[in-house]
Every structure is written in C-alpha cells, then in structure tokens.
Image 1 (cartoon, rainbow, N blue to C red):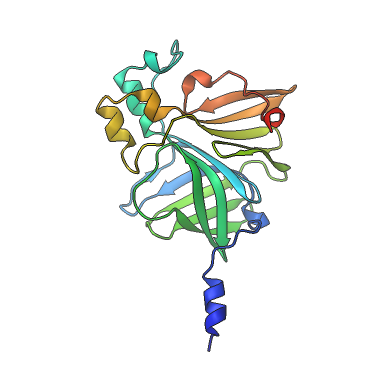
Image 2 (cartoon, rainbow, N blue to C red; image 1 turned 60 degrees about the horizontal axis):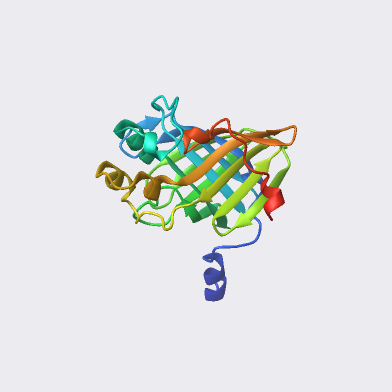
Length: 232
C-alpha cells in the first residue's frame, strides 16, 4: 500500500532543474492532432535550459512583409497572419515524465486547461503527448552538446541561448489579450500594436552581434538584439 504522504509528494510539481535529457534547442518535426490532421510545415523552436525556456511558433504561408517597418504598415492579411503565430516563455516545472510550462510571457494566451505534457526521449528525438489535449509533438535536438545559458531573466523579457543560437521573448504590451481572444480581436479591427507587440525572436550570435533571423514581428528580422547581458 502506498503511504498517503508519498502519494502526495509524487503529485507535486518540482521546481528544481528539469531532467538533462529535456534540455537543449528543440525543433518540432511534426504535430499530430486528435482529429487525424497534422502539421509538418510550421516553424517551431523551443530552447529549454535547466529552468527557463522560450518557444517560438510560426505557421507556414507568411505574407511578404518587404517594406513593412511597423504596425502602421500592416494590411488586414498581415495582421491576421501575425495573430495566427504563437510563442511563450517562462519556467518549466516537472514530475516524473510530465512537464508543466508556466507562461510568464505569452504571445497568444490560450483558453482552457494548463499546458502540460508527457515527454519521452529516444536519442535525439523526443515525443510529447498532451495531458489535457490529445496531441503528439515530435521534437528533434537541433544543437546536441551546445552549452546552455540564461542570458536575461526579467519579468517582461527572457533570453536564453544554446551555443551561438538564442531565443528572446519580450512583452511590450501594457497587458496581454484575454485568453483565447487574440485572433478575434485582431479581425475585429482592434489596435494591432496593443494586441501584437510581443516580440519572440530566434537568432544567431556572431562577432558579438545578436542577429535576429525569425521573429513574431517580421520587421525585426535582420536587426540586432541589444546585448541582453549588458542590461542585467
């Protein structure tokens, strides 16, 4: 018979460093949904350190943002695409093989239960099975052996790196949109800056420059992230 106190302890989420096998720069290869559909075309990167993480999700079919320098230049099609993106950052808690993503920063807060899944690693592959939703995500270790670091840990800005790659999440909106409302609010014509000014970016570090390659704000691509280590 299980001791009740042991059972209670096993059910608690842990805040100590997550398993080493979960840490790294992960690229999603595929998403399988409960209805039988899948997604193998979205760009999804997740960089996990011992505690903090940043996740960027961009669907295929992005419009051409050439010449766009800010929110005032966006067409309705561009606004809809930006609202369809995802990304979040915060702390990963765990118990056994289960993970709970606490979202301090969230580009598009979802409605519904917490973000929790079961992670199983096999060599460079890791499979994530949803706990509250019936989905499966297949992840590939994109930078095996790369040293990991937390570069910036602030209430509204998190930066993590794996070798010469970095992911940055910065919340600039006064408040994030209510859960599950971002797309509808953008389509209704609400102020895009108030809804979408949450920058989640992936980039590379070379010659001391933190060059942004992909971002939820396309006009930031090709720009340099101010050295976050200097702002600590």
